[in-house]
Length: 311
Ligand code: UDP
Image (cartoon, rainbow, N blue to C red):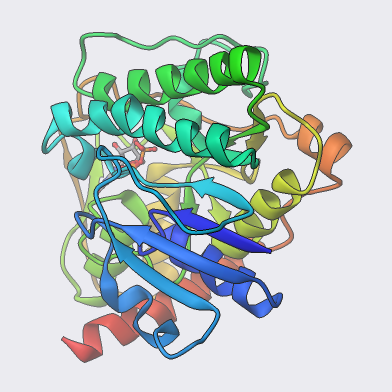
C-alpha cells in the first residue's frame, strides 16, 4: 500500500509514517512545516519507500498514486491552534474539501484525525461517541473544536453524497517521543520544566483531568481503524485518568526534579474532565492501549532529555 500521511512531520504523523514504513508500506508525507518539524522525519529521507511534500493543504494537492489517506494535518496544541485561529479554521474546512475531494477522485479511503475536543467541556463522563458535546462556539478553543466538528460533518457529507470511504478517529491526549519540547502542552511543559528544575506550571488548581495515551498505542489504533470497515467516529485514547496536580507530582518524582509546583490562571473554556469510553474501539477494532503511564512517561522523559542535550 502507498499511504498519504498529511501532517506527517508532526508528532503523531511522524510516528505513523515510521510505523507504516516498518510494515513494508510506502509513505507520501505531506506537511507545510508550520507546526510539524522536518527533523522528525529527517532520518526517513533516504528510504526509497518515503517521499516528502512541503505543501499547504488549504491549496489543492494532486498526488501521483496513493491507496489511502491519513489526514492528520492541523495544529493541535492550544497554544499553536490559537496563534492563528483563522488558519486553524481553514484546516477544518478548506483543507478538508481538498483532502476529501482527493479521496473522492481517487476512490480511496480516508481516515480523519478528529479529537476529544469535539466533546468540548463535557457534561458526560467518561465520553462515549454518542455524546454530542458541549463546545463554546465563540470561545478561544472554538477555532479547533468547531473546525474539527465541521471536518467530521464534511466526512459524513462526502460519504453520503460522493460515496467516499471514511474513517473518523476521535483522538484523546497523546504523548511520547517526537513531541515538540516547545509544544506548550501539559506533557511537554511539565517534563521539560522538571528536567530543567524550573517551576512546573499547573493551570487552575490542577483538579482538571486528562487521560494520556502513549503514541505507539494510538498509532496502532489508527492503523486498525483504517483497516476496519467501521465508518463512524471511534474514540482512541487511554482511559487511565489523572488530574493535572497528580500528573505534575508523577513527573516531578520520575525526573527526580527539584522543581517547585506553581499555580497559574486556568485558561478560558479549559475542559474540567476528559476520559474516553473505549468500548467501541475494543469491540470493533479489538484495540486497547497496552503501555502504562509508568512505562510511557519514562520513554518520553528519555526523549526530552535527548532533545535538551542536542540544543
Ligand atoms: N496545563 C497545565 N499546565 C501547562 C499546560 C497545560 O496545567 O503548562 C493543563 C491545561 O490547562 C489542561 C491540561 O493541562 O487542563 C491539558 O492541557 P493540554 O494543553 O496538554 O491539552 P488539552 O487537553 O487542553 O488540549
